[in-house]
Image 1: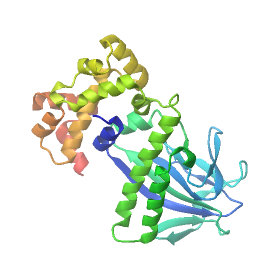
Image 2: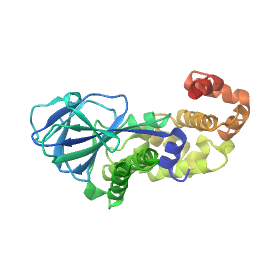
Image 3: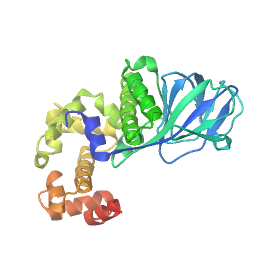
Image 4: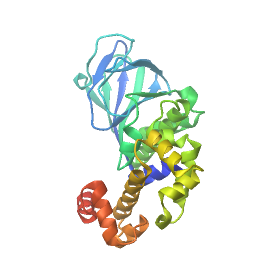
Length: 302
């Protein structure tokens, strides 16, 4: 595991879904309802404000990205303070195969909006510790975010064969760019997995998981972190909110789930996750998930 974030997202999966585009003219004020997924808004053109229920408000402009990790209700407005109406009350048009929300005025503010979700255990490890809203500025991304945005816009406009799939993958890239940029610029606020990435000791611990799964252990992770077992336990719990043993047990099950999703049988999944036997694997899997590996595979397939 030389890149902890990439490894986690590859095992857990990123599930994205483009939902709409908003093309609004001043004056505008809309309230978006809460959804059970994370939300992003990418400003293609113009400037506006985004606010959440706790009163936090941010001005956003071209190339900026706002992310609401917990999918909470939020306002998008032309001025810092103004009246709002439900987003669902605005008419929809079709634009390049996407629903486009418009308020009937000359377009001054253009947003690409989407949702994304992480599978187990990335949602709990990455999303749960995040604040209500993240803002990543165009000026803080050294151009790579702008390149992804440009590619996404081009794909949406092309309506070419396979464009929906390509756009979905570009959203996944966009999400990783945004999370990485935010964690880098706000290390004091980066908790959970994103915070762990900025800690050199923990990064060294995660590198030990590049070895054969059978050798994964808390002791080897502590050695990789160049810390005593007790100190490693303290640092790990402080940053990740769980003990190294709990984390490693969950990680093994996540690796096994990924193997099962990809078509492995029970023995292969157990070996991939570093379990000595199928029986040990089954007991550990049920402790973490509450169901047997067979029941989980059946529900995942359904």
